[in-house]
Picture 1 (cartoon, rainbow, N blue to C red):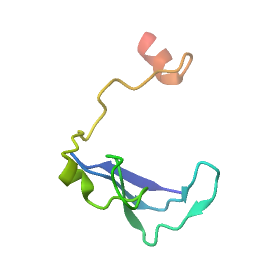
Picture 2: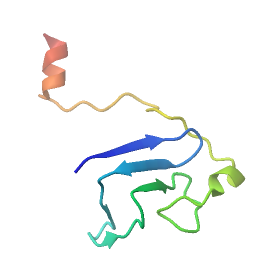
Picture 3: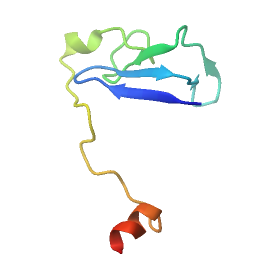
Length: 83
């Protein structure tokens, strides 16, 4: 399964490709299409999908990480940097 997730500045997460959407309990959510926009602002009336409300509420978010990625002890990346 391959998917691409793109965080749009001040907007949704756009998911493209081969993906599954599920509830926390594991029930399938039919996306209805191969590309979906997922709400990041928490105000959408059709969650988990975006309905554009982020523009009305002034939602602000960047396109990258706000903090460094967490590192797991003993991960190959961590060992490589330590050498």
